[in-house]
Image (tube, rainbow, N blue to C red; front, side):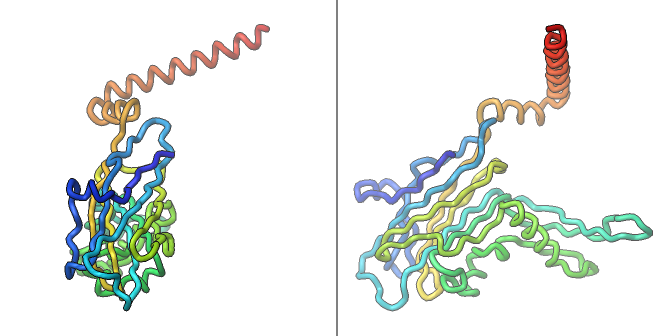
Length: 261
């Protein structure tokens, strides 16, 4: 399984990497990417993102509220058309549809403690960290009843398929300075830029944040076949037919040899 490592930076490398803007000038996240791409090949079976980080301070560690860490990884977020079916006259038909404006292909949240403990509802609303807040559905027609149910359906289906997950108590925090976690990503990843956000919180409020991106792309034979099917579908169809004929002929020849023995 391929691994991406977001490692804590050494002091010598700090000047070369962008810093997260620290709120109140007290604490900030320090991270760097050792790899910034995931290569999807024909044998790709998923990846595990290892996230390591440190907290840079210019003042002593606050003694009031403990430091908590939230890590959120989200994939490309195209709009999704969700339709509701009803049975009328014995036939299931589409009766309503709502465009869910933002629905990440993959979304995982890891926390160092229970989610409600590390982040207040107000902060969640501001930064859109929880799964429910990350999925947006606005502008539904007035006649559609229960418009929120359409967004909830997207969440329910993708949680069942392992594409959305909340992983509480999976971020280890040492001495309120170092933190680490691992987030597994499924084999059926969607190509695109995967945004990784890290939040430091105290008393449920965000005190610092950091953002970076991981590029997920198909490579090798996987990329060739995908590009061919999209850019030259006729040629792709002929090639698929030729492979099917060759495979059928080969299997028939093999069985004939076995029977003649």
